[in-house]
Image 1 (cartoon, rainbow, N blue to C red):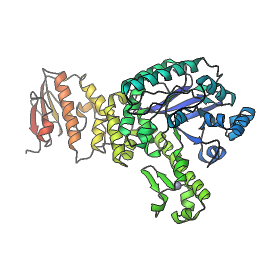
Image 2: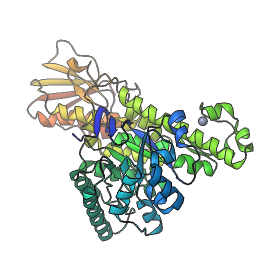
Image 3: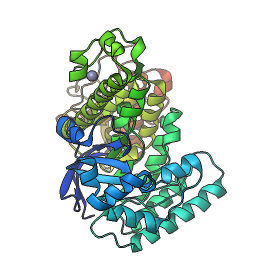
Length: 491
Ligand SMILES: [Zn+2]
């Protein structure tokens, strides 16, 4: 177990954890949002972040501080906590982002880590190479090799009790991301940002983002705190957390406000298009859209930034509560309905159901089957794996109907889409207590048929029969020929 991070609760790949930041003498509960503070211009002051929004941690850019004479001198003299006036933990970025935007920077990993330590940062960052998506493989490999060298340098820099991040790169090559994760995990560094995913999010490539993060997670151990670097839109927090990300940073709250953009968990709205404010935060209860539009630029930007932060922190709390309640994937399903590309992200997440299954609790409140994607959730996968281990009698009826009396079968099991067959004794155990719609869908029937097929494959000598409620022919094709079929609808 990593000393600075402890996992308290899990749901799917998501977890509630505690990140201990020794230098700040603060324990941050994760998933956590780190508002990005520009040291040269703050829309909302760090003090207000802590007191009004409950921010426990923020992130600022040590490269900008390093390059701005007066801020640098004050930071060296008084320390970052004093300069920013923030009581929580402060993470600093290194300038890698500037490297990706402008091509070069003029500090080394040793210099910038020592500088971050000197100005009192609590979590510092080496200068990694943020390789963009879709580059050729040779470049991705070369840059990853450089990033690995920088992490090894970072291990040797004396940074006291400042935590140090180990960014995971590798562009859009899953095997490189996994290898990068494994290498980073093997260092003595503490926090693991998955880097260079911003271009994917800017292009709404949530499917590729999920694949990249899933690959990095395979390399990183389960106990590694993971930062989804640059992911600040509340619409995608549930998805990011379900993949196993613990830290998110938001510059979006301020950048969007500057362009009159209003964040919601279902996407971004232009202030000029809003006739109503669909939010109950202090900004939205005290103003109408017309009031906001009538404000001078600076005041309007501040109010919008405050609203954007309120919905951002609110969503983080909602995600945490969903983990506690065991219904995180149902929240992901809801959020996935906000945009077709988010749905692609969720469907890609379900491609990694086996990976999520490892951290998914065996028992939760209730499984709600609310979309055809629900049929691919880790709980269904786990039940199918369990079917391979259950012992069956010589002859067994699997039925969507009631148990028949005085029949020719030794026993009868229930069949419930999307899970498939199970002994009636398990009816009261999770996830078979699921709430499923009476008007089931083909995906759920197909998953149930796959469950029947698993049971049949594991018990080739058993005499199995399936009584179903009018399953279509293409679903029944998934059931092996050795299983007798009976249509309960009499069709
Ligand atoms: Zn609001």
